[in-house]
Length: 185
Image (cartoon, rainbow, N blue to C red; front, side, top):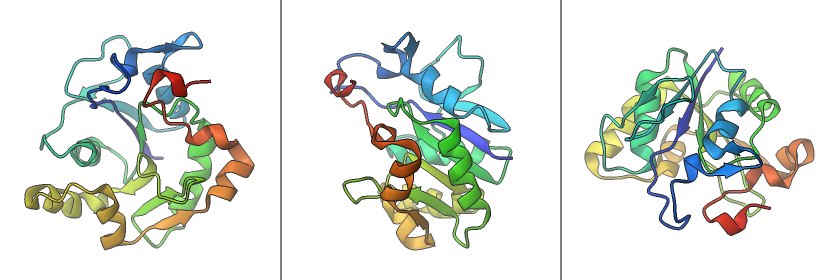
């Protein structure tokens, strides 16, 4: 079992409205990402505003001001299970199959992070698994003012999943990040 956390704390400036609540193909983006995590033993939202009506707890950042690293910190603190699937609310094409696939990698990983590479060749830290063992590193980085998510992977090590492997199984749309409404097909 693993925990599933959706990070919905961004300001949505480029999107023009709260993207978590934006309805795409009949569902808010937040609901789509939560549904992709239905295989988790628990699901919750990390946000600094209430998101009522989604049927899961909402937790604020415990150490605010560090962007996504604050969200990861809160997710690791609140998770009941050792592995935590962390998803951004603007990734509407994540699927349960993807999380099942990544969790299998996590269960055999010698590292506390499992993250796919994007087709563009960079890690995607907001569609990844983090072990609760990452918590001291994340908290230390926040207290030191180092807010780079990739530093967690660089410092603790990570199992990287090649983009080709993820795309072959789940299609390129998996990586579509809806930073702007125009990005949605």
